[in-house]
Amino acid sequence: MQVNNTTRLSALIVLGSALVSISSFAEANAVRYYSANLDNSLWYMANNTQLNCELEHVIPRFGKVQFHSEASKQLNLTMTFDMNQLPDNYSVARIESVPPQWQPGQNSYSIGSMDLYKQFNGELKKQAAWTLLSELDKGRYPTFLYQDWYNPKDQVAVAISAVNFRSAYDAFKGCINALLPFSFEDIAYTVLNHKADSDELTAPSRRKLKQISDYLKVDADLKLVLIDSYTDALGAREPNQTLTEQRANAIKSFFVERGIKADRIQTVAHGEDRPIDHNDNEIGRQKNRRVIVQLNKSSDVEL
Image (cartoon, rainbow, N blue to C red; front, side, top):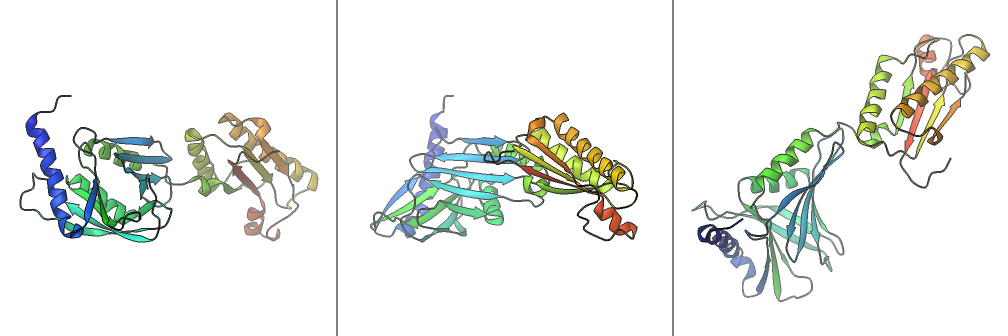
């Protein structure tokens, strides 16, 4: 794509605005300024699934920033300040929002700070991360200002470019809206309950099983599924044992139908052994009529 001189001049003015805004920060010392320019400013979705959303932007010669949100019961967002050269000691970076040249009369203003720890990338959580995104959406340049660790005579200014941001940001917001409202940890240990003398699950348990089904549509990479089936002590012992086997096999079939290999599924039918409540009332018996499903993604697990 050919860029005309006017557009190039606009980009240079934006850069100049940022440099002017940090002049007081630099004082008499040198400033090393890092930012993508008009020609190389790129925003892209590094991950776009119902489990993870990642929006990335490369800062030439410095590193990159990554905004990340994952499937969870709670809305979450993390910004990672991924540096090619990690801090050598603790410091605090001041964050300024620098205006673009097409907003005449606008001033820079503080939007927070970020702790920088020795040999760790910087990180901002939820509200602070959303603040950066909202400033970028306004066309402003969030700029991180800090003392260099390796050269005490230098200051460092790192600006996040707003060029080419909005379309990628729209895709990122769409991805977040499509995230599953639960994580793997929420379904890794699930207790299902059955109706009396039946292999039919209760309504709440059917909803739990649907959650597992929804997750497996996105990620079926399970290394091991453990299914432990129990029942109450109502009725004869042998039929109760048979019933728990039927319940365990029904849950196993559920996983096989969704792509989990049968040899990665282990079922144990305990019958009426190991009750967790009394069997002399329906409330207790309902608790005892249970199937415990444990999911494992670790590659170290062996049957």
